[in-house]
Length: 462
Image (cartoon, rainbow, N blue to C red; front, top):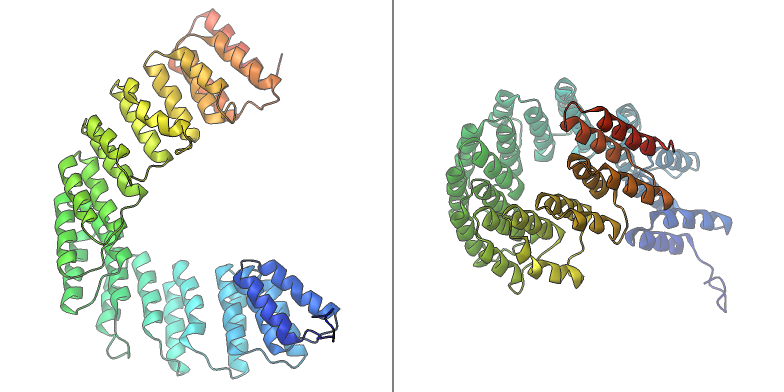
């Protein structure tokens, strides 16, 4: 625009549009720099440009002090900040844990006769509740009523969450019972928050009673609330009750997502009820709910725990099965534990083809498994030829096993190789070596000398 012919000088509106585009593209710092460019080129920012800069600092860059400087700057220029500007800044201060600054801005808004809405109060109330300062939260809600800003369902949901956090469920029930006279109606979030809070406090029976109350009111339990309820039902009561709740929620038309199924499947898996997991897995495939990687990993893990290794191999090889590094680690550990490591060819084919990328846990699991199956040389070679070379956790496990089996010379050789390559001997390796010597019990003089040699290498005393 600057270099066009005829010249078309950028305006404050042009700059603000470009700043907005940069912020949407995930480049808020560049957007803030563009404001400096506007000043450098003699373009006077208007109130909208200042407001947007304040929004970038408060909501994108999380710099409330910088945002506050913009607000002061605007005021000095006579460009009065809006209630939205104040709301942005109050939210930013609360998120940064700077509640006194947020309260000062609230007082400033009152002094300037700005309209105070529940949206302005919400982050302050949340900060009080997060700090378990229920008395301050109650006082804030009372002050809202005094200033004719009637608390809405969002405000009360924040308050209910705070009460649940401190375990004051009598107060929660009282707030819900008095909702009519206070001019608000509890919604699905209110009850879901209440149910989740009861579950977290171990009051599962009471949570189930609240679920029935929700049903009579025709409210839909939120997905998060349902998943928490199912998780605690399965833990505190039993997995069958979890299945019944799941089926009941489906009958009532509650939204059931993949996390819901994963929650119940995981509990059945821990109880080694693989047929129940299979039933849930097949039920899931019939519904418009897409299984994710975690679903498949729970299913594979359950099959391995039940000793259904051929079935696990079949599922893994099925077209459309979503495998990841966790799947790889589950299969390696399970097959080695069952002394079926020779059957892992199907897995390593995918690893070698790059379909699954081994991580540190994979290599650590392999080291443990190889040693337990008596394949010590392979374990040592694995560490030496790992792509990234001498990963800390696998080396620590290898050092532990070598000391336990009395092969301290190999440990020293491994340390020398690492030091020659300029690698640092991590404290985790040091801890594992000491633990291995301690596990061997009171040793003879020769073992003490070996320990001293290892410690010398670890401390760099050659």
